[in-house]
Amino acid sequence: MNFIKKKIIFYTAFNLVFLTIDVAKAQKQHTALPTPEQVEWANAEIGVIIHLDINIYAPNTFSYKDKNTLPPLAIFNPSKLNTDQWIQAAKSAGAKYAILTAKHGTGFCLWPTKAHDYHVGNTPLRGGNADIVRDFIKSCKKYGIKPGLYFNTNFNTYYQAGYLPMSDEKRSSYNKAVYMQLKELWSEYGELFEIWFDGGVMSDTKGGIATEVTKLIQMYQPHAILFQGPSSCKNLIRWVGNEDGRAPLPHWSTTDFTTSSSGKEEIIGLTGKPDGKIWCPGEADFPNRKKTAWNGGWLWHSNQEEHLFSTEELLDRYYTSVGRNANMLIGMAIDTSGRFPDADALIFKQFGKKISHIFNKPLAETKGEGQVIELVITDTPCMINHIIIQEEIAFGEQIRAYRIESLNKGQWSVVCEGSTVGHKRIHKIANTETNKIRVIITKCTANPLIKNLSVYGSNLVQN
Image (cartoon, rainbow, N blue to C red; front, side, top):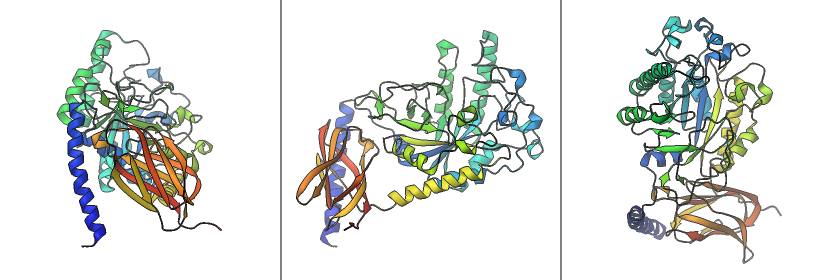
């Protein structure tokens, strides 16, 4: 065994001892820490949220506020439905998890629910034997993508819930249907990676069934990540305040409250709190078609390819989501044939290749603990343009402020600085010639634990 291997083993053993001490200290100080599920979710980094609803077959006549405009079930017949194609497209973009809108705003269900008749099992698709939720779960497993389900508990045109005032009797009937459908989805399709509550779950005091929903989660999906889930649950994540894929800066994983917004209005200031009471990181969602498209870009409409986000625009949102300590959740609008359109899928593939090209192989990387960490990149100067820094978030967010410097001709110069690190902070910098960088943590709550410090660019310096 050579010296380098001995050194790695020594530091690994040292770090394990150090981490054990720190987590005990964090627990004693009541520092908010993530669950193992939240750590796994952060590591996934990129997900997709797949939208399909019956109103795409009648975009010009349907109104969410008018039940009489609900499209007839006979109109829903995506003849080329291919959930494998959806998931392949998602995977090509680098997604590690996928969420399907099992029931969106109309109330139409993509599985044969027993709560009412307005569902896929009563459409012409496969002679009335279709179950798109089951197809989706199967495709996720086939391609190694973690599955999740979206269910809007607050808005439902079929029951006229959320759009118009409801009597106590109608509210009670609706709540029973919600409970039945959530039980079906959470008990009949296996373990889910994430459950997406659009607008949260209405509290009992306001007429909702948050308490019953919490019990269902604990019974059937205790390990699922919960986007805007009931505040009494664990594994919570929050909205970042916009549907543009842009997490604010700073952006802390800890906060004193979760969110329960439907996303219709942008909310400024959802930065979290460095010493927040709960671990509730942000997920930056946005459609792959711009807000100027029909239905805000979330649902498909013909002849709107000019609204597609380009590869470069997706890359920009990668920097402002994953690069800012949040997960990136990209919308996928399925068309009336049942496919993710070819033009959209091509951009996803190009985006995935772009990310891989930039970040596939670092010029150098290291990890360690302490307030100053140096990284020797090469023996001779090279050109760098990206720096990634990651904390070992299993033991909390310790860093409060830092700067990164590069060495050139014996002189250290500041190339970037920040406050939040968390799971990942990506600094895209101007081309910088150097052979060594260092991170100096100027403010922290405990001895910082750096999971990864890495640099990217070219080992060639232009003369």
